[in-house]
Length: 345
Image 1 (cartoon, one colour):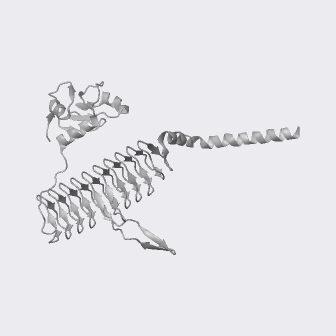
Image 2: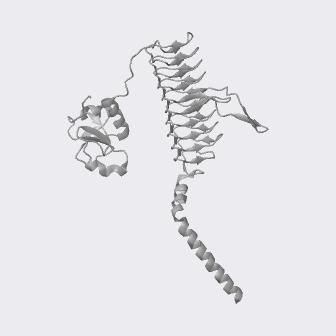
Image 3: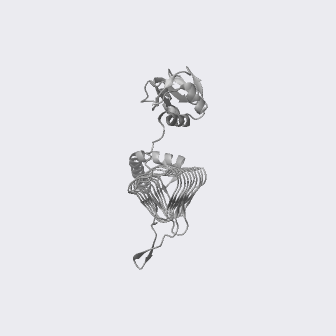
C-alpha cells in the first residue's frame, strides 16, 4: 500500500497542514475507527468531540480544531478525504482479459478498443460498445444498444434493445435497464398490455445500483441525467426524466412520467406518484410519500409529504397523542357536567 506525506496530500487537495508536513499516512478510516498511520475527516460538526480523541495520525478539517492529530485544513473535508482514499487505495482494478471466446458477440456488433468481455456475456445485433469498457459475465446488451467509452457493466446487468448509454456509466449487478414499463389499458375488467416504444437514455457518469429497474418509456424516453447516482433496488417508472447530479438512495420508487430537476436527493424508501414535477435542489426524506408537485429548493418529509419544518412539528406530537386524548376526554366530561348544571339552574 502506498505511503504519502501530509505535504503531498495537502498539495493534492489544496489544503494547509497544521503539524509536521513530513508525517506519513498509508490508509484512511473513520474518526472512531482510525489508528496510527491513518487519515480521517470531520465534515459534520456533531462529531467534533471525536476529533479530540481520535487515534488517527491526521484529520481533514474545515477550520483548526483541538486535537493531538495533525490537521489538513481544506474547504471541503469530505471531498478531500475522497481524493485521498483514491490516492491511497485506488478504485477496483478490473482484469485485463480481452474478449472471451465464450462470450456471444453478434457479427454485426461493434466493440471498441481495449474492452474486456468476460465469458457468457451477450452482445446482440447492431449493438455498439465504446472503448475501454468492462463487460462482466452474464451481462446482456440487447440489439441496437449504443454504449459510450469507459463503462462498466457488472455480472448479470441487462440493457434492453435500443438503450443509449453515455461515457463512464456504471451498471451494477442484476440491474435491468430498458425493460417494459408497467403500462396497461383496462377494458371491461381485463388489463391489456400497451407496447412500450420508448427507450432509456443514461447520460454520462450515471451509476445504476444493484437490482435497480429503469423502465423504458411508453412513448417518450426515460432519461437519467448526467452524473446522477441511483442506489440499489430503486425502481424508476416509464417516461420519467431525472435531471443531472441527483442522488436516489436505495429502495426509492419513482412512478412513470415524473419530471425531476437537478441536484435532488431522494431518501430511502420514498415513493413518488406519477405525472408530478419535482423542482431542482429538492430534498425528500426517507419513506416520504410524494403526491403533488414540489417547488425548487424544498425539503419535504412524511406521508403524505409536507414541508419538513411542519412535518417535524406534526410528528413530534405523535408520542403525546394518548395523553392528549385522555385530557380531551376529561375536559369533555367536565363540559358536560357544567352544561347539565347550568340547565338545572
